[in-house]
Image 1 (cartoon, rainbow, N blue to C red):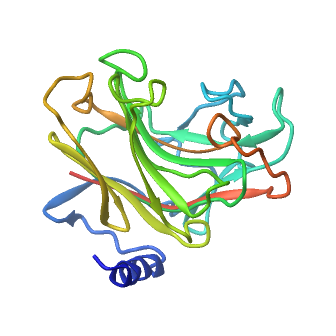
Image 2 (cartoon, rainbow, N blue to C red):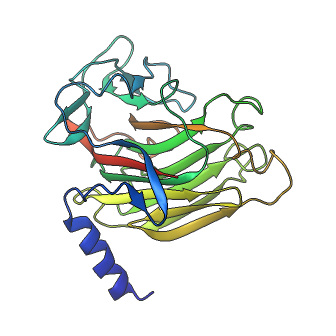
Length: 264
């Protein structure tokens, strides 16, 4: 596809503020959605929270709050993850990390998230999935699907990644792909995966950008035959996000989610 045609597709998708909900899409049915068509805290029947300031295995600097509209609030048809430079217990920043664990999880499907990313060096927004029951063992053995990650010091790129026992960043074998997307902080984009028993296709604005195939060699390479739940968060600092330090002039910052839709 030419750069010109890609730009047209991106423009058309980005201009739609909130697409019409379809009960069917390419022969698949809508099985779960979050349209954020209410006000206040995220819907407690759909979302829970990871909380605290323990670094979350990445030496992150934020404190994730629970059910606090200062950091996670729904208004104007969108979810806002708000990142603040404020002290909370042992941390100098607060943010939110919401997840569907214990409330909803899925095996296979087309998953789409329309989002606008926060701006600033030191931020690390992510849209990702983790195993509901870790049936193959602790991370990374049961897998991780990173639908979208961005680090604020590299604002014109987003990254898609999978982690397994055989492929993970601890041993430098992770399967990842970076995409040039210069306006991810100023415009909404559609981030997603098309996941089945044979492959996971990563999509940006409905365009395939990276495919991870099932090798057939077992769970060490492909643990993606179990249910996964959904996570949305923005970290501050950390092993990757904080590699170039944190610019304290960027706060407050916010990540916006327009909708999430899952078809099977």
